Image (cartoon, rainbow, N blue to C red):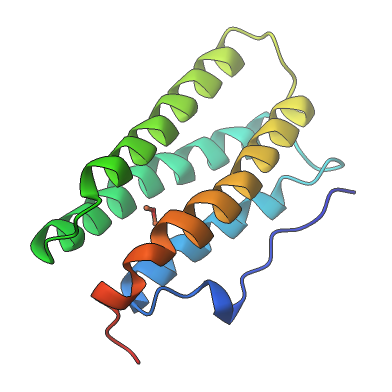
Length: 133
Ligand code: FEO
């Protein structure tokens, strides 16, 4: 059984709307090795597509409005996530992987994204956008 992603208060960027969107990534825990099937993979892809559409757009709008200096670099990381999602969906669609193998690679990617992007890049704007401290 792979390690679950668990939300911690330390992960908060102190913008409730953005935290709520970040928490949706914990949904990957539903893709456990035993239960993962085509229906769950399809569901996860849809959830990730919504995340990409809603979260990146809202975060970028807030950063732009606040005059965030590193916005271009931040957007680049978001575009890389979008490209990854598109590539992994295509790989799955052509049938070269199974739901279990697919879920393992998605889980690994999202764990790295949590550590490197949410806890790294996103944290760098926290002081600029914080609204609940
Ligand atoms: Fe919360 Fe930059 O993604």
